[in-house]
Length: 243
Image 1 (cartoon, helix red, strand yellow):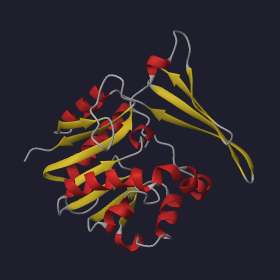
Image 2 (spheres, rainbow, N blue to C red):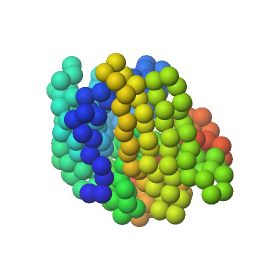
Image 3 (cartoon, rainbow, N blue to C red):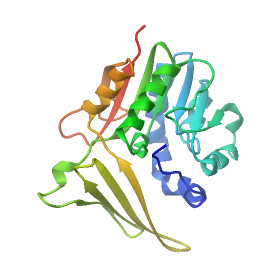
């Protein structure tokens, strides 16, 4: 699979690095929406990671399964209370199959962009559709490419400059790729890292869904169902299989 794998070093500090994304005001609306979509059925998370969403969703009484490519990320999940409720499978989200069918399959926090080719992103949609019961939903949360911020001829966009972190995204607008560069200051020193991602516009994801036999039913700017507009920086999109 053309995707980068999260390493032991990344997994070890992942929860601390995204601590703000685990705050109750962030997690609450996500879990509320997913629990509503599950509506008594099962939920499957692609790229379950360390369980940021799967664990609180399972606490709501939803039966949750998860697919994860990185063994170090799974190791972090398995050390947490409640991990025994999550049926995890190691594998990639383009081809790995989990037994049974699901009311909702979800993929959050920009992780669709970890798949570095259009073919693999289409395969991800097809795999989600194959897991869904009739009328089931595939939900993706990801960013809208901020290309309006790029002056003609420029390819770098700083997105965070603080005392502890400098983040700069490097865009290749021909290949629809970006490299996200990070310089982070921690107690053990200064760390530099970079990650590659393939971005797409919402309309391209809609076409991927149609290839996989699904149709768009809702799109919001965030999990609070803020209306999606031309200035939205992210989207939460939901596609449904035929009933």
